[in-house]
Image (tube, rainbow, N blue to C red; front, side, top):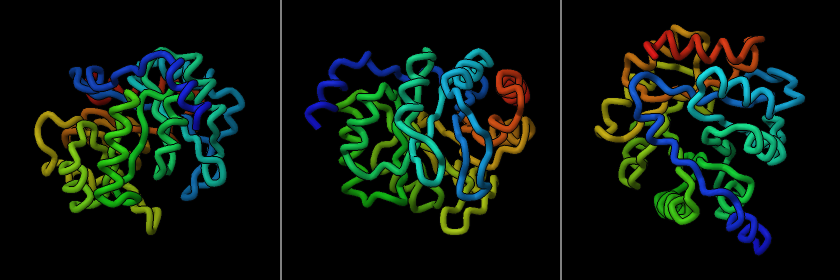
Length: 238
């Protein structure tokens, strides 16, 4: 922990992603993702920094980096490599439950960290969000049900993601976003997560009120990630 605190103190100040997410049009959060429990191996990605750079050139507003190793094939080394290459905000996407992981995220250069409401009771959610503020991290607070959205709002989430994927079944239903987004107060940045199979899905999420859309599998499989990001943005009127 002493080493993490020292590294976090020496890290460049975190980038605030909210101004870009609040800009007109839709923001794309492009993900570095090798595999997933639902779909298995997705892409080899020998050079995550190069992939992230292509995302950024294509217009991605932020880069999401999976750092969980067992099920997603990611690592903190991927986060380091991406942070060193791109100038846009970087999200550490992992199953974050312990404060130590947030110190890790900042020490390795992350600007955002994922907090899943399903994994945290109200006290821990408030505590982790408070630590994010202390460290300069922006928490992406993720919900999947009406109760989780209510809890995220009560905790003061400024950046609220609605995931289409039910973690108990791994089934993704994009209409979950349409059903829940109306409960999110004006001024909160709304992120649609999962279920994107092409530009039309990004456009539909935007039509339902998404400010940003997080896309992983479709981008890493695209063969031309830079053009794919641009197509997603343009499809939603960006």
